[in-house]
Amino acid sequence: MNIISCHGVMPPEMDWETREYFPDAFKWKYWLQFRVEKDHDVIMQIPKFPHAHAVLMKYEEWEKIMDFQDITQDTTLIGHSAGGGFVLKYLATHPNLKVKQAILVAPWIDPDDAQPNGFYKDFEIDNKIVNQTLCGFDVLISNDDAPYILDSVKKIKQNMPDVRIHEYENRGHFLSPELPEILDIIKY
Image (cartoon, rainbow, N blue to C red; front, side, top):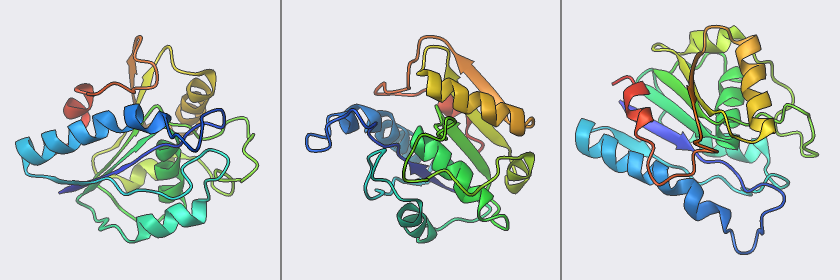
């Protein structure tokens, strides 16, 4: 088994030069990498995607990075925020790809179609994507996340009724140093 975790992006209002958003956003991913490698002898990769800013991101560039990963039926894909939306689109645009599990943490899919770069265009969100996973599709969401994240999850739930939704209170955008809840969701 292996895990590939796809990071999110800095929102347009964050400073690209200082990248102040990244340190907090990545903390739990490195914590999770340590936990799964230590406790389960599972390799977890955290590829770095280029132009990780909401205005600059390009799907084709991210797709090239993902295409280099070792994705098999024994792979769990995890995506946080824009990385969650990317995992969803990547599976949708690669319908023959089968993975063990997909886990989206506070996914963003640009539900208002506000992104000028069209990162989330040209794919359909439907229940067929769930069928590309052997152990199912999970979404983690907090009641106090941003409205565009809540709207993203609402759209996912409407179009993918077989997805498992894990709802939490007061967890924001899951930027904490640890995310222990995900350990019980990952299927080993």
